[in-house]
Length: 144
Image 1 (cartoon, rainbow, N blue to C red):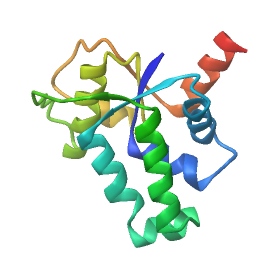
Image 2 (image 1 turned 120 degrees about the vertical axis):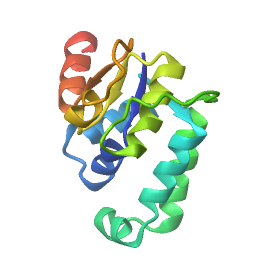
Image 3 (image 1 turned 180 degrees about the vertical axis):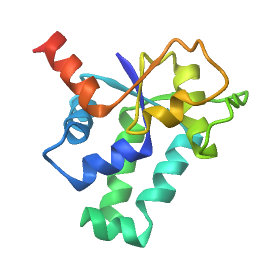
Image 4 (image 1 turned 60 degrees about the horizontal axis):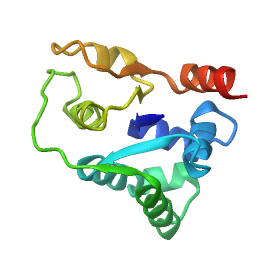
């Protein structure tokens, strides 16, 4: 199963070990689900996770963040984006995740901002935008 993960899910998974976002990261590391990744998405992860205020939130050192990003890049299915989909989302950075989910044929786009993703003008994508909690509950029901 291929999924695209929004930065907010990655961040939540690094901040708390008790939530669905952390469990999803464990599924990626255990290779039970496949992370779709584009250069743009990886650069977004890098930009956000290396901010000083984010490092304080996660209680991780810069080197640890780099190791996490390296591991995700190693495990991920990489995709080049040759076009730009612009569904006119409220947050321009969310377009990166739409493009990656589309290019990778992801089944799911995991995000805590469902309303932001669904607010775009383009419709009819094959992937479904779901919250980490909903995805993890569904995954457990089908695989455990």
